[in-house]
Length: 116
Image (tube, rainbow, N blue to C red; front, side, top):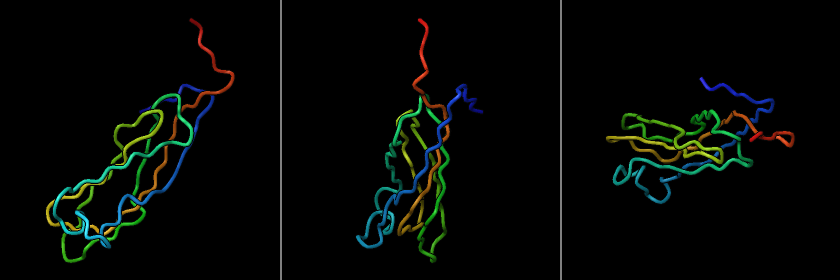
């Protein structure tokens, strides 16, 4: 559990197309090459500590002739952003993926100060 020890809590959210491999015959669609995609998502304003980040699929366009396999994670979460990582494996063919994300955490304010 992440406990936010702050009077100010920030919520950031967004949506991003991670890839669209169908048109160009990319690796995810052909099933050859990398079976993972990662994209850095930068927050509009930084948090004061790494926030809790939730990611979800909002669009996935998959080949129906093969098993559907997918893993979606937020990795390397910092105050400034995170890596959205989509992975698949074996014969799964993915044409395109869009994700939405939500980050919740402490943010700094004008009245914050440290006593040294």
